[in-house]
Length: 400
Image (cartoon, rainbow, N blue to C red):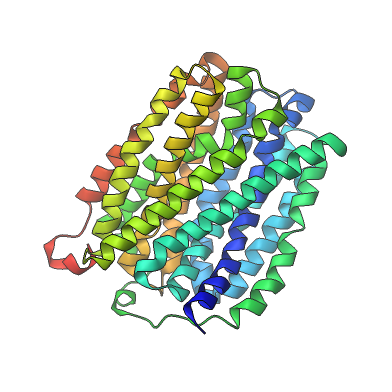
């Protein structure tokens, strides 16, 4: 199979990211509607996301281990079926407690999403290509976000917000047979030296591992806020309708996608010029961290247009940094524990959600969104310093 066909088959796998993000993002897209019906405030909405974050955090390492043990195909299919069923169950709820329960159950399966795409990259892509693979996963997220907006607006206008969960949920069951067919046509990459010498216990003992996790927690404020609160920001700050605010999402997602591909391309070029993979990815991450500081300028935007510009640029930088950060464990620990090593980062993401969403909601209720924009702008620079401080010393330069 030639390289073009190999990428085509891998692209089919990354459609699972679209479904993962669609089922998750559909909640944000319809949230102003159910918040109005159930008389919820921003803090209560934050608790729905926190319930998801708690289960996501606890499930991530287990699902990463599960994927490494049972294999990519079966593990991903089982996880996707679980989150699709739980996602549709949200449409039967009648209040806050039901939404918290069903959205949290969905997190069990969804926590396998990023580890599975990482394992797919490790299985089918060359080392220098993996951040580009992460960018393809980001493309899947963009497609999922676009579909969430389209489905949410159409369903709200025609059948009500509950129907959006049903419309999104069944798509996962179409992907499963498609991938099992495509996986038979995809050549795997041979195991390399990077895949040897690491298991769950040894990975957990390394300072570098926890550097990845802490850096990810510090990096994700931009992503969490602009992913799940952008429509609320535009509704509250500029008085836009839910549908009009949702219609801005495709532009923001497209710019985010460009950032992810450029971030992956930049680290690939550095590696081809002789840089050690982890060093190349840290360098691109640094530039992304600097760009993310633009979130602090968003409250100064005099109009919707300028707000979109500043949000887009910070989202762009976040995506460029993220695709490299999530590829670092693959470079460091290799294929046999690929899903588990990345699942530790997703577990950190769940931990952040556990505390961030109610806090964001409370601040938004009491003070608006300006303090949040400033607070999320600067932690990524600290994350870069942590990556530098926890990297292996000179005796392991081939992996640093």
